[in-house]
Structures are given as structure tokens and as C-alpha cells.
Image (cartoon, rainbow, N blue to C red; front, top):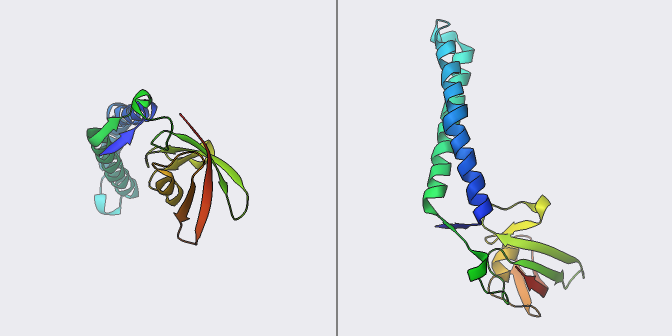
Length: 154
């Protein structure tokens, strides 16, 4: 089961709808056109269209599975004093005194450019359930380091 924000759930649903109702019919037409060109054994366009079709079917199946097992999170029902999914956390790396700020999200919403890290990442996993003022040990692949949680907001 995956927990998603309402916004991300709607984005995935819109992408799935676009793939099924717009992109896949267009791809099916491209495949029929390539097939009509004759000898399939030497038809590069046909092979490329088949690969694209397989890739699109795989993406459609993946998105359907994500939505089937997704649960939309209502931020109003989450505690505001500890780090949970959808929390915005400001923390300081105690080794370097570098201050950072991230929102903890599901793996499907992760986007470092937008300041969103996965709850399954080493930092996200270490922060879960802790409160402002606590020092947390993060076990990353490269090393282990400590961070202090400066603030937690929704």
C-alpha cells in the first residue's frame, strides 16, 4: 500500500487517463500503419511501434497498480508535532552545520528539485516519528551522520 497526497493521486490518475484515451489509440494507429507497409521482418517502423506499445502497456499497468493500492492522505488527520508523511522538516547536519529543508513524501512524489524526499530514503526513514529538537542518526550508504531536527510543520 502506498500513501499519496491528493495532488499526486490526481496527477497519476490524469496521466493514466491520457495514456489510455489519447496516447494508446494514437500508438495503435501508428502500429497499424507500420504493419500495412508490408514485410514485417525488415520493417523498422513496425518493430519500433511494437516496442513503444510494450513500453506504454507496461506504464499503464504500473499506474493502474499504483492507484489500486494507493491511499490518499488527509493532512488534517496527521500529527503536527512529529515527522510524518507530508511533514516539512528543517534540520541541521551536525558534522557540517549545513541547514536543509525537505518535505517527506511517498516514493511516487519524490522530487529533489521541489524539496521533496522519500520517506524510504535514508534521511526520510531516520526522521519519521521524531520531533523538533531531537538528534537523529542517519545511516546512508556512504556514511553514518547525525542531524538535529530544527522544526516540523505541515
